[in-house]
Amino acid sequence: MNDIQSLEPPTGLPPPNLDNAALPTLPPSTSELTSGRARGRRRGLIIGGAIILGIAALSIVGLGLDQALTHDLLSADFSASDDTFKTGETDEYKLDVNEGSYRLTSTSAPTSPLMTFGWFARTAYYVEIEASVVRLEARDATLGLECAHSVAKEDNSGYLFLYDPSDGYVLTKVSDESGAEVLERALGVAPQAGTRIGISCGKRSLLPNAKTTITGSIDGVEVIRAEDGDYESFEAASLVFWPVNADDWIRFDDVTATVPGK
Image (cartoon, rainbow, N blue to C red; front, top):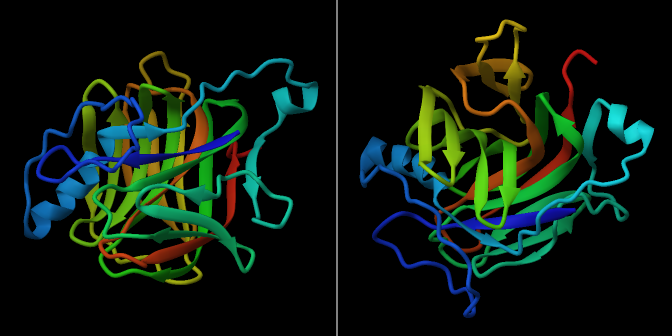
């Protein structure tokens, strides 16, 4: 199963045209900053306010033994037979497979970021997600990955590792109740063609008061880290893209999610 989300900013911009669909609007970010470096922080924060398009609750029943025990949670190579991630169109984006990779293209100047989900074979309590950036044709685009804790019609919660052109690398927590919260920031540069980006989420200790550790990596090297106590399990990976202009695009390939050390 797979799906997409189109997310709306908290203030100042019109919502996407939803063709009269009665879809929920989740709480906006608390950030109201609009310029310079502050603009980058706002983009990182408002990932939390979502309009969810076509999300169906994931019901996992009758898992076979291999699925229940697997440590290879997700693998997408975007071959002709690979349907791990959704293709199609939203009001502001087109999603397709191009030259054996997954292309996300803005069809207008987007007022909201795009999140597209691939579901794990089972719930994971420690996960490492990676994706290769094949090519990026977008100036000032925000992009990244999410460890999705819960995705349903009225709920999107999890941890994100983002590159933002005004803010560098950002780790963000999102929830339907409180919007978004930046956990950590670090200096960083835009991922180039051939770069492999990654996020890991999970407890590193068995102690009762241990928190979830979230890290972001570039080509296997950790560049940012944070801890948080809210989410301990994860059910999906998300690719995130928010360009500035129409006809901006990015191509991802070789998206994987695994249990580290297994």
